[in-house]
Length: 404
Image (cartoon, helix red, strand yellow):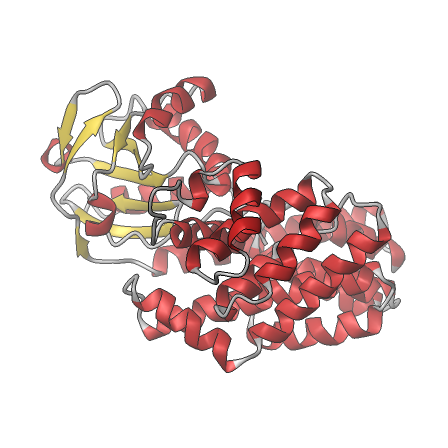
């Protein structure tokens, strides 16, 4: 569920930036101990800051195996009237790696509560209010909520499988895939089918997942393992995977290139992390790839090495330019991040230009033609998406059209 995880991270970070505490640090700037102290001191005074502190601490209580702190914080956080953020936060709490049965059961219950909340009208109402402030259209909101509900239900279903409640999990997956299909969800659905010995349906589902994301190693493995259970030979399995990947890549390419835009790129003036500046006019006559990211964003951290590979591949191509734009508020974090990761592509500070580009989630990448027209837009990063191939498809298509 990598794509939706990237959006979840954005939700929580933005929510923590919407207000600040008087004479105190904002929850996002607090250490674990400071946030715990703030929660204990203010637990009877309901406020957005109190619940933001809970959102910061809850995943850390699980990660650090602090059951006592978790119990204290979850009791406070369950009172949060914002059903949307509450459901999202609870769904993110994973029992993976835990051994304490009490802790595990508590997280199972949290995921179950998250699913119930996600089905309510209040969940939609709070989400609509949240995204209206960020200028989302009704269509964008509907798509976002469909994905979020699928993610939350997927988390609950995985917990049911861990409890050997496979039939219940399967019914949830059948509900999910009626409205939403995602590579990771389809693979979890296929695994649930395998646990109930429904191997043929599982194989069909896993093949669909591989077709959606041809570079997914997990999808290849599920296809292979399920096909073996059905008695296919290794040669037959290899052929099956090769044909699925071939068809999947062709379909993906057709769909991506068909989703062409015709939007003039906003004028901009950006400062490089070394202090130099560029303008949009500096890229006239070039195909420009511009990627918006933040140092704190895990999906961005996954995508940027692939962006670096693309930059190195086209560095000597006079028709192509690749830049990255940091949306970090704490700009001092950017130069060491770039240096420590060995990124070669040029990095600039957004300075608010992300709003002109209407960036609503990160990572977001734009491909601009030689005349300054945005032709393609890519939001999020999914493991196994074959980033390099996608960029080459975009670039080759624009070159073939003469840059227009």
